[in-house]
Image (cartoon, rainbow, N blue to C red; front, side):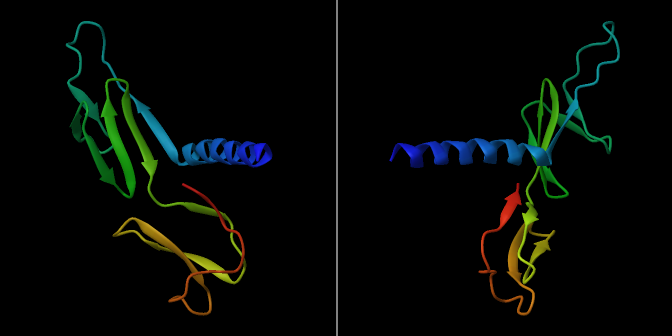
Length: 117
């Protein structure tokens, strides 16, 4: 029983580390101490976002805080995929499925698959 608990804890910790690999942070830019403090964040396209707001852009969940913009990918990256399977991504819905190469209507059932969120 105790060995199982240790394995679960290790897997959860590994998942937390792996999940953070698909995120990025853009620090808040300040001009100088003479200008008033910013009222929000400006993304790479120049769009203003108020502090506390969140949005989805190109399948990334993003949010604006007083520290800057943080974004994380909603679509996982497959790192261990059986050769009989492939990842099918729907960028319009920001979702994905692992399916059989021979029949894309069937989910892959060919062994363990590792994904990074």
